[in-house]
View 1 (cartoon, rainbow, N blue to C red):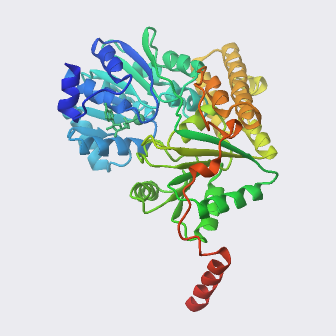
View 2 (tube, protein in one colour):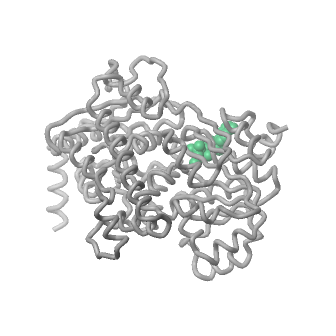
Amino acid sequence: MLERALQHYFGFSSFRPGQEEVIRALLANEDVVALLPTGTGKSLCYQLTGRLKEAPVLIISPLLSLMQDQVNQMKKLGFKRVVALNSFLTREQFTEVLANLAHYDYIFVSPEMLQNVNIGRRLKQLPFGLIVVDEAHCISEWGHDFRPDYLRLNTWLKYDSRPPIVALTATATSKVLADIKDVLCIKEASMYLAPIDRKEIRLARQWFTTAQEKVNWIEEYVSTTLGPGIIYTSSRKKTEQLTAQLRKWRIKVAAYHGGMTNEDRQLIQEQFLAAELEWIVATSAFGMGVHKNNIRHVIHETMSPTLSGYMQEIGRAARDGQDALATVLCTEQDKEVLQFLHDTVPTEEMVRAYYAHVSLAISDSNAELLKYLYANYELSQAIVYCQTLKVEKNKAFQATKNYMETSKCLRATLLQYFEQATVPQQACCTQCGLNVEDYKEVRKFTNLSKQSLDWALRLQQMLLK
Ligand code: ADP
Ligand code: MG
């Protein structure tokens, strides 16, 4: 019966692992937490459920670009009554949509939008058949740092006629899964935890003594290797610098980061999808909702702060199931920087001062967190909260550091963090005898040497003068 519906609405002949179980549980009005690998088709779980329940669906989604992308995809699939309540709408459009909410079958919102009293109240009046929290790991990882509105979801979600919730994610540790259930106030959740290993993504690690050596290595790699690929760096400035450097090799490359306008970011995503760009140099702002299935390389110029983040980022490669290579470049200094990033939880003194209304010089993320704690907890609870958070962050940092340093299998180390085991595999990672060259397709026009290219560029500049 379900398969007929799948065929009817999507034209697919069978479910991917996990989809059917999730949909069945939702049809039985159970709350569900589903951990399914990237590219499994998590969206289909709520799209089909909505159709079968013949009730509207609310999707809480973390990023504007992601929402926009989902809406476009759904429209292409033939879903007409789909809307994203966000800043892409003009003021007039927004008012219009808000006045006609009942018209829509699928409504996308950000957690911030739900905090708007008017919008939050209007949405509660709709007869939703399902509430979706997409990329639900954000509840935990971003909730503490930058997105307190994710933590505030639980207040909004407490209402009598609340429909079942499905939390969807591709990466979560048991701690994150517990956070998800806690924040969403789901006591009895059906859990679907699929294996998260992506065998087709080969893992490589390279050590360097200086940051400059890493840049040289990337230049060499990208100028001789065919993409498409993503290079993750740790700052906006680095994305720009590296992009400029790679352009000298006439590589079709662009930078992508959160400081760019929505339009620019949208354009770069589209160009990358259309193969007009071969490489993207990005901060972690890039990736969610990028449906490009032939990404062959993910290079981390700097290791991600957490292994969950790393897993997400490399998971963007190889969605077509063909081999891909994920390489992390490491230096000793990187470890210090990562340690620093993890050391940002408010101290007991800070919490006490904040509660006593003493003014403080603190980071934006700490200010957000303290504001949230003050509104929801007693002083003593807030102190314990921060202590626990510090322990968690330290654990996360140790795991990241261990991935950079370990002499054991990288895949086993990565999966261990998610409490999952690996199936031994040939050429799994650089610790298990992977020959990286086997997984690189050589760029064809290598007869153009760097010298001649520099010379050509100089000539061009002279002519332009
Ligand atoms: P996720 O959110 O899990 O990363 P998406 O929901 O974006 O993945 O889906 C990835 C792709 O898989 C989409 O192009 C979707 O149409 C396709 N897909 C989903 N379910 C199926 C299925 N049962 N059979 C074939 N393709 C599917
Ligand atoms: Mg998705």
